[in-house]
Amino acid sequence: MWRTNIHRFAGYGFMVGCITMGGWTAAQSVENPGAGLGQSLAGSPPAVVELPAPEPRRVRQPVQEYVTVMDPVDGGVQRLEQAMNPFVSYTHLGTDFGFIGQSNEGVGWQVGTVRVDMPQGRWGGMWHALAGLGADRGQTLDFSASFPSFITAKFQPKIVGVEFRAKGRGQFKLEIKGVDEELLWSKSMDLDSPDLRTFVENLEPEKIGKAKFLNWVAEAGAQAELDSLAFIVEAPAIAYDEYVFLSSYAKLARCYSSKHGFVRDRAHTREGLFDNVPASGLFALATALASRQGMVEEAFAREVLMRIHQNVAGMASANGWLPHFVRLDGGGRYEIVPGTEFSTVDSSLYFHSMLLASEILGDGAIKSQVAKMIQSMTLENLVDAQGYIGHGFRDGGVKDPLPSVWRDWGGETALVLGLVKMIDGALPPRMLETGRVHDGVGFIVEIQSLFYPDFDTEVLDAVSRQNWLGARREMLKRQREYFSIHWPESRAAKLGFYGLSAGEARLGLGYMVSGVDLPKQSFLHPHYVLMSASTDERPENVYDVLRRMESEQLFPPWGMVENFDRDVQQSLPMQSALNGGFESIGAYHLLVRHRRQSNAVHEASLRNEDLRKAGEMFFPLVPTSFKGGK
Image (cartoon, rainbow, N blue to C red):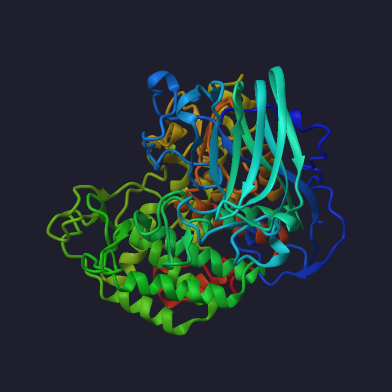
């Protein structure tokens, strides 16, 4: 996304960040059965706290900011027979798009815009799928309840307006159509402005109902540059802390295939083509937590848990170690995507998530089956001569191990060691004792605390003899200072943004690793904001950052962007599953800490026998009461 001026919304009744977290009003009260280790060390919280008031909010959700990651050909004119790469060409809704009419004669790409120069006697335009891919007519967007349909009515937003931003001259038409191309709504407009002009049209969501496409059409003779297309969303009237978890969960939920019971790596990819095993486990856990908040029915959470477990239990593994990416084979079973790996850390993410989800939902049968899968795993060809655990195997299996091992200090190594402890309790755990993560990558020092309360202590752990909570707080401090030190004139510095971590690179082309130990880093991965949220002693600080991100279009209703640059000129609006999982679980921890409510993840982690083997391997002497348990 190329940054567009938020001030243009003045006069349209937008309410973004209208209530500060300090401005609570008395709503309900809640008892505090356990606040977590970090709060316990700081002193007992009050027995009763006030909940923040609900906020009525109208928010802009981009449908498409017209940026291309492809080199324009033929002068930028779009030819209908030229297929675009669907892996990097998608809308901000996690769907696909395409061209209609005689677009090949008058529609082309420029930097950050679509250029229109329609000859006389010709017309052209673009279609944008609103849910799923355009060819998948089984998925539609309900304008009265626009989040995934399994989210309960109280938490559903409405689409109450559409925005079209362009400059030039000519006649244009906006259309909303159903799955069979039936016209549900349309609006014609005359453009005659050398400067960017914003058209906003109100919509009646109940009259539109369920739709499949949002189109624009340029009539003959139109000459213009199109900047963006967006919806105006009326968010549910809930408190902001709850909204943050809801939006993060809905982002992950868009990657879930109700047809196959599994999670796509990215929302805009075809179901069963490139699915994500650890993200599927995270979705099961996030859905269990969403059911605790009333955002989905418990029966749905149980169904998700069962279907994901059945899919994974039926796929081929490497001595029990799971693939990272899978696809459906001709017989309807999942298999490893060729060229990818059986991964120890991704297996650990999956099994940790499924143990917690089954524990939270009280599903003893699936918990037992998951535990048996773990106990059947072996360490053949995974332990090197020094006792370090390998990263996994190539797609050929156990006879072809990856050359790297989990040696570096940090949460990824800790999670792998935790799973190994469940498999073979006699193997001595080994990791470096530096207390610093490689390159200062943000998520690495936080990922273990998505699953365990044990690391919320300044007590030195028994494996690496390090102060994990101290290291996390130091990382958060350095993250928040980084752009003020290295890029003091940047918008990231002035707005207090942070997030040097790892994820998709600029425009989604490749993978990027950045951290506070590297100089002159210029792209941020904001998943770190939510992953580290519970490390901040004042949750209000994090919500303030999220509100500023929202005002800069970095945290729209469809979820947090994947990355953005230091000057907030570019962002990647990808609906990616793995970071969606991290963001959802982090947002849940932030929510219950902010409200000083019991933490379902912590309680389940402390109850589960397998997870206790891992937690107590690191912290055998820390009393359970100091970990937020009873």
